[in-house]
Image 1 (cartoon, rainbow, N blue to C red):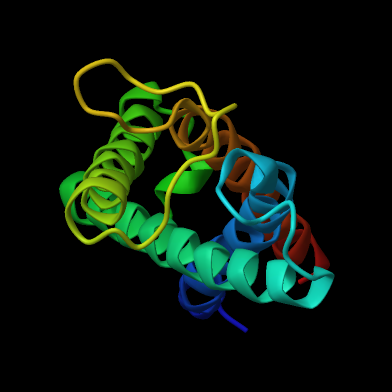
Image 2: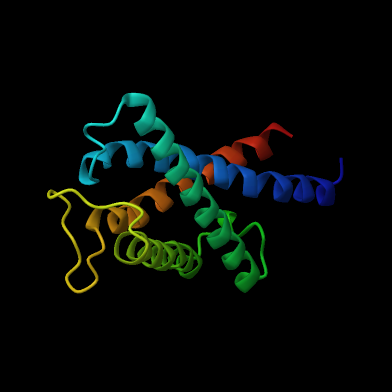
Length: 157
């Protein structure tokens, strides 16, 4: 295999790896923060798994969208291998802005879910703090894990 072929294979693998790692880490977070949402403490285990899986799929799509946005802006699909802080911050900021909008719409406009009384909220917006913290911590961990996994794949060649 030539070097160009290896680069294309890496690019094909990158986005699914980003999506899968984002799903896994966000799922753990979603299960952890379940008591901060109304009805989740009383829900059956399977119902909680289904709801948290659905939320984690949404988080994974946000993560992949943010990854593609940074790839487009940086003109580098494999930007995860370059440790430029501006790209990482753009990734986090994109996910954070989307999360703020979706949480506001879900809780204040469409009444899709409600926070429990233990959820700390942003003053003025009413958006929960745990989803905001989630998009500050989980993306860094999941991108780091995706990067390590892909670097390991590249070494196998």
